[in-house]
Length: 114
Image 1 (cartoon, rainbow, N blue to C red):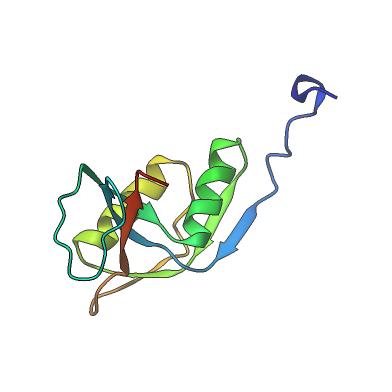
Image 2 (image 1 turned 90 degrees about the vertical axis):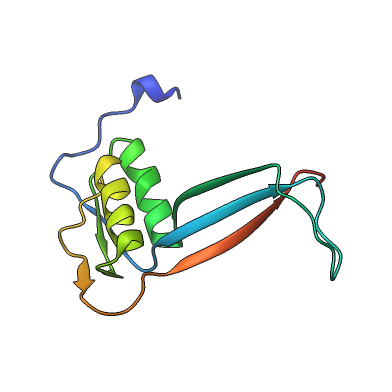
């Protein structure tokens, strides 16, 4: 069965996600460093992350109607995450934006060797 023969998803159905979202700071390196090694990254990227946010972004790109329930802080990272999700078509109207605190973030080392 080809994807051309599948009916379109119903417009009134919602894919609901409840869980994490954060900002990922990705640094690519030639190989993973040994303890106490000092190495330089070959490239870097900042993008949204978190299991729920990633899954719902995929759902939006598949043409579904995703909605996220989560919480972020009213800081630069939190606003950036909201903007990115909304640009991807994820409904963020059920997110709680806290006036205090810090939005979650993760540092990720990407090993180009393996």
